[in-house]
Amino acid sequence: MTTRNLARAVARDAVRMAARLCLAVRAETLRHPDHMEKEGREPVTIADYGAQAVILQHIAGRFPEDGTLAEERAAEFDRLTTDMQRHRVIHYVGETLRRHVSPDDIRRWLDFGAGRETRQVWMVDPIDGTKGFLRGDQFAIAVALAVEGVPEVAALACPLFPLYADRSNLLGVIAVAIRGQGATLEPLDGGPPRRLRVSTQADITQARVLESVEREHTNHSFSAQVLDRAGIVVPPIRMDSQTKYVAVADGRAEVYLRNPKGENYQERVWDHAAGALIVEEAGGHVTDLDGKALDFSHGEHLSANRGILATNGLLHDAVLDAVQRVS
Ligand code: AMP
Ligand code: MG
Image (cartoon, rainbow, N blue to C red; front, side, top):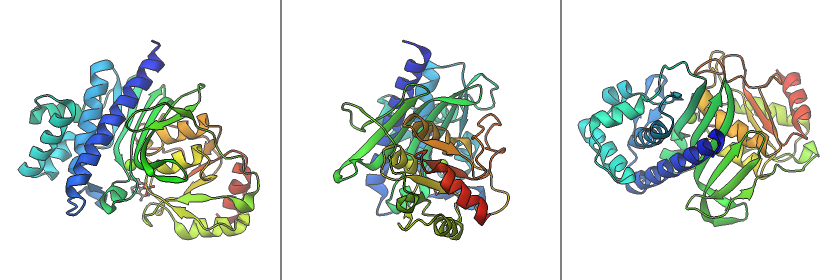
């Protein structure tokens, strides 16, 4: 097996295990959501820690030399969780991996590969869209392998996203991609993959546009102005997490637009690396709001970029043009 094929298998298995852990936590806690608050007031749950431990344990076993950029850290796990919460993380990770797990195992896995300057870096978001997860809406588990700052392999699990647009009873998908080899979608519980392809819609007025649910994560009034300028008549669709990228990759929408509020917010690599590669490999196009390629080579932040625009390709310039005129 080539490194890329091995990495794809590892990423896919890691997001599948993490998705199962998240669904198990969700089943137990949906009625009594429980979360801690990080600096900057973003929520974190025991499922975020459990999922990251499972993912990095899996990667560490196959790629022990690689570096990682992952959302959660062991120091915060120690600082923010109670004894009871730590106990539950250990319980869920042990159940998922079917082995005995200690608190030190969790800490070691959470920080696996952190701070290493390596050619290969795994970009990991254990629960992307934690606010969606807590609300009972969409969330995703994202893993991408970047080689010299370029995402080459991606796996994205969306446990509550329908496998087919018109069948809401079949929930749970994994999208995977290798650069240059296309992107596929398969059921979370296993089954044959099918090819992902972006929409062929070329009429800008008919574009279906996705944006965050959370008003703190994107400027809704900016998007409304862009849609207006572009002559788009379809109301925007709000959805949490990188599931938005899968919706574009599968032709269920044409545009994902993100313009963070606040001058100083810089996007995090783990919020975009997997999703962006999947859209590109499905035939779409991804840039920032200035039309610049996303640059994943500056560590944790997309510090060379401003906002995000992912489209089916055909409508990219029309949306960029509207963005420039509104900005
Ligand atoms: P979404 O589900 O599209 O709203 O995006 C969720 C992600 O937004 C989280 O994983 C956070 O990393 C990220 N995020 C947190 N704060 C901000 C912010 N101020 N602007 C943009 N994104 C943010
Ligand atoms: Mg995230």
